[in-house]
Image 1 (cartoon, rainbow, N blue to C red):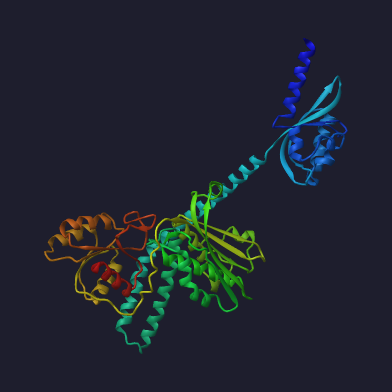
Image 2 (cartoon, one colour):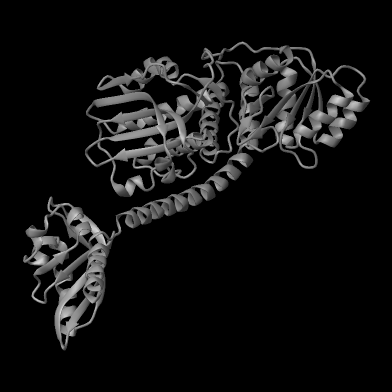
Length: 516
């Protein structure tokens, strides 16, 4: 009957309004709340009797939103038309919820009896928009860093060949000039300059992820322990060094010397931020990076990681500084005290290791750098002791030298000759294969540049094996290409030396290759 139909319709409307996921509120023209649905009451933390009959704006409007809401209400009441707006509804406990609202006047005859507000919680939408904005900023920053990296890598590649020739010839000259000579002193200063230049180029290549590295499976705790004494001397007596290693952390795959440089760079920056003394804390921990973290950090995949945190109690950094902190040549130090490549180097090295680096800092509250490196289920290698020594290793084997840069080739011929080796030289792969075909004796070593026009070093070594299967191979390059390295990592089992190289380092590497 009609009465049952009206009751069903009433119950349906009540259920629709009160059990809806949307917020419903009915407000009189004067601003008093007539009704608020269960969903909205629960979200705001109120009981119905606490809001019905009360002024809606007084009960739910945040102070900074009050005027905007008053104008919106006036639009509905005075102009008798609906409106739409977003604002934050104040809850009973003082917290706020972002809501998108649609207000609509309800008329009984010609007179507006009340108006209703229908809204929905946009917290998730705001969060998603914020994440999207953060990812967009990360993408823009990554693209900028990639562009600068390509430029830096190209400059470093060309300069490496020049520097190899300069530094090598200076070393040869030093070995011929008496130490008491004034010329020896001048040449020694030139050598110092070439060492600094080589370090600068190495940093540029690390930033641009164009440096060829030889990663090993290592224990970060052991690496930090090995460096402890050196770091204490580096930071000085006014700064207290605290190490907090987590026991039994997993191993990571990194280039040990490259990572030592990262730790030195971070420690030096921390020292400079604490001129009056303070505390430098280095800690490690095993962490699991989930999808929520990876969603807001481009290039990071979920899984187990080892975290290295380096914290100081120094000046801290402003938001403006933090925006540029990993850019090459950006520095807050005086011109004579830094190149601005330390953190750029760390950024590139960590990215090349498939890791993530973050910085947390506030002015006057210190700084923390956190580095996350993928954990590996492999046993860590024992860390090697320093192999540097002044003894020049020699030999009498036959070396086929292939280098397309004339200056570098001439230098290498002189270096190899000084070490006692018999040298056959070629400017490219085609000439090298012809010389090898005509050479009836044993060729003990092929020393070849990786990147050459026509035939690259890898192709040359493979072709040479068919003529002289006894020949061992030492690759050399100042720049990474996917010929013997993928993402800058030298393939396992290949012998490699980077440019620029010193005479002693080259001598050791040749003997390692020949004696292996």
